Image (cartoon, rainbow, N blue to C red):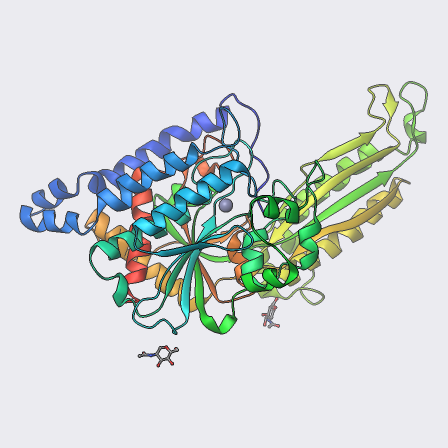
Length: 496
Ligand SMILES: *[C@@H]1O[C@H](CO)[C@@H](O)[C@H](O)[C@H]1NC(C)=O
Ligand SMILES: *[C@@H]1O[C@H](CO)[C@@H](O)[C@H](O)[C@H]1NC(C)=O
Ligand SMILES: [Zn+2]
């Protein structure tokens, strides 16, 4: 699931300005070495020749310079004028897919496009019948998007394979490696996320082909318009056999501020939060703002306000609301406290006039946590307390569950390998032994969520400026692009 669109406020907020200064100083202190690796090493007593050969093994021209140039090039492939927009199989998406396909071929991969418009690039390595490692991310974007969300994972994987190819090591890989650029993750056009990865994982129902966009065009129409002969049978062909796949790995921008705060470019993802979306409707007694005495009101707006504040308290301190014996034991309450986030992002009122006590207020609740039982317990507790508030205020409240997705835990073995790959990438770049690679939780959904139905998954997060995404303000340092390519390379070297 995409994250909610970033604030549309175009003026830089005071908060952003406040955070920028300390962030810059963190960058400087942390990247001084990586910006000038040879000088740093020379002055610490290591020979200049060693430093130069070490720098050569870091492949900055492929993993950084070319990758960054490609990210910008892809960022210019848009359906809109003046901002980035690439929705499922739009003309710009097709163009982006073709560009990615060229880059895959340039890296020595065999390429094809499947019936859902996913772009694949594969190398068989030494043993074509061994289980394949899939590495992917999405090529579609939100509206007015940044250039890194999705493409970074695709481009860093292609860059790492290009390095292996230029070293003549591509054919010596122990198992087939396949990069997949998924055609739809954000779900902007059809309001249905993961069309591409769900089809590969085999969890996309044939009924999804009949979903239509705002203008009544269906997924099937769009595929056929692009000469992709989608049928029920062909949809099944997109699905991979679980036994042919070893695992799935995804590199993605963090879309949060944690790595930047810690001052490190890479982190390993522990899991992707489960999510529930609710719609709450509060009905009261509509009336004249001037004539109904306060004591005689059944005001759904005030009730909604109290319920929303209750939700905030509950999600800030679940431990003081949930009993340990009922739905939740102490360990799940603990993991809840660190991962639970709740948001009311949309509210509507009827009739919405300044001189009318509303008759009805509806609002959404977006609730995410890494612990599925804990999430259920919070929803249960929230509903209970909400009904008490509504009873006390004599308004009627109803809750509808609009969407549910269970949490996905990343595979511990893959995570361990990714962790050491990230460690070795950062160590190679800075020439210094690093502290532990941080382990993070993902609050946003990713293709790895769908792919977890097919195989074990692992994810690497890359630092992005201010934690901002889904905005043209989204930014990843050139050196962090380098770090992510180097981490994929280190990860692939384990497969040699
Ligand atoms: C190739 O992989 C298959 C499937 O894992 C395995 O059975 C076979 O022994 C492998 N062949 C070689 C030569 O390693
Ligand atoms: C607590 O709940 C978690 C899952 O929510 C479970 O994995 C764990 O085993 C439980 N612990 C005890 C002591 O019941
Ligand atoms: Zn994304």
